[in-house]
Amino acid sequence: MRQITFREALREAMQEEMRLDERVFLMGEEVAEYNGAYKVSQGMLAEFGEKRVIDTPIAELGFTAIAVGAAQNGLRPIVEFMTWNFAVLALDQILNTASKMLAMSGGQVGCPIVFRGANGSAGQLGAQHSTSFESMYANIPGIKVISVSNPYDAKGLLKSAIRDENPVVFMESELMYGDKGEVPEGEYIIPIGKSHIAREGSDVTIVSFNKMMKVALGAAEELAKENISAEVIDLRTIRPLDWFTILESVKKTNHLVIVEEQWPFASVSSEICFRIQKEGFDYLDAPIRRITSADAPMHYAPNLVSAYLPDITRTVKLVKEVLYMVK
Image (cartoon, rainbow, N blue to C red; front, top):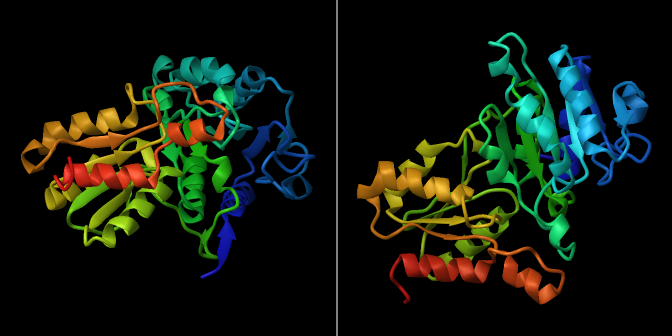
């Protein structure tokens, strides 16, 4: 099977859907003339023209409002944010209009729209460019939240998001755009709301998503050297969340560790912990543990960046604590 980059997988998803449906269009900062801030939309202006690949001003609230209005009137916009940190300015339209329109209109007016872009830390970018937003958007009824970790999932889930009748928040990572992975040549989609068992195991379940999957899988590799078998689950979709796959894994391993790039309070792991202890308490042989970002703003210094983010070493140590191998 061919290997393509994460950005190429996203581009193919958008191109294929735009060829299939003339209502689909892309808009955002630098998506057209500059081929995208991260070159995700490279070549799309030349293929689809300026009416379907649209450069916007640096005014997230304004162009998001235009896209939401277009979605309510029968089009299917894809809105690219240069980073989800900037999209905070557009939250009014996402929260107060896109997510609520179907309910407020008694089911008469929908809002089929995809909001996508880079999310979370990308190294030394400082406090205002390093926040991870999955849990914030997952707290909004009426919105689906997808957070992908590899090119295969990126293409298949973006195509599903574009076809969905609901507003979808699609989280990527600046650090993964150059990652390569196997992606089929032909048409495929991945259903929203279904997680993926990235590695099978029997001793402990590790749950993660987005670029923290690299930490989860790296920790599983290190644990395997000590004959500890870790099952690794990639959530892929944060809302709706695939509780069943996590629960079935915990029934087998009896231990659960969650790795996420979120602040700890009211995070994705908080919700998973509640649900699994509620529905799977009898299967747990130890308390659920998690590793998150530090409960503080991200700093610029390299040592503080490292201290802020989950890593393989700390994840391995936490797994061993869950298995009562260390104190």
